[in-house]
Every structure is written in C-alpha cells, then in structure tokens.
Image (tube, rainbow, N blue to C red; front, top):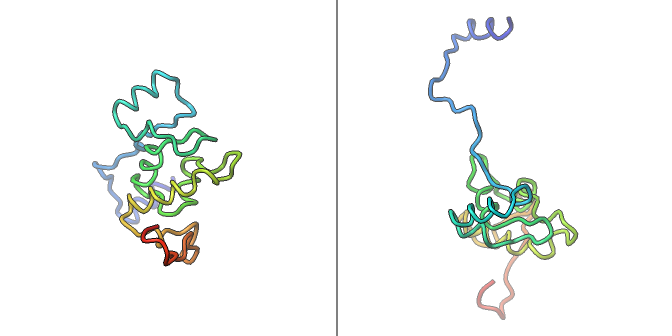
Length: 132
C-alpha cells in the first residue's frame, strides 16, 4: 500500500531498461578444476594467482575494479575479493594489488590509497632508484 501511494504521489513509472540482476563474477575458491580451466581459457589473467593464501587471481581483482561501483582502493579490492585476508595478512599480495590498481585506474603508484583520501600506501620514491 505504501509503495502504491508513493508511486502515485511522485508520478513514478517503471523503467523498461532496468537490469535487476548483477553481472556474474568468478571466485576460484568456489570452483572445481574443470570450471577453473574453462575460465582461464576465456581470460589468461585468471591463471595468474595474486593471493596464494585465499587463491585469488589477477582476473578476479581486475573484475572487482571494473565492476559498476568497483574498487578504487586497496581495502576495496580486499573486501570484494578476499585477497590479503589470509595467513600472511597481505604481505605477499599487497604490492601486486597496488600495481594492478595503478594499471587499471591509470594512476601513478604513489596516488593509490589504502582506504581513505589521505592514506597513501607509497608516499614517494627514493631518489636512487629510477622507477618504483
């Protein structure tokens, strides 16, 4: 009754182009060997494991970044994929996640943030090295 009243008072109409389903994504932890091999044949990035503890591939991380309302921070990738929540607590995969984020977002590595606006992961480069 409330929906009908609000819809009538606000002159709402149904959007015929509305998509009410989320796009499918892959989680290696929930797949068997045959499904994993099929996904790797579709996209090679799914064959590159970034987080060994939770078995998260580069393809899953790229997918979490490219989704509508995708990840823009390191913590965003961790929450969407589970990378970095294993036994090593991100010691092995944190650097790889930062590199993938900078590549996919077109930003410098020093512009990637951990969680909020002023939480840069890498503050600058050491002058002895030519690249980060």
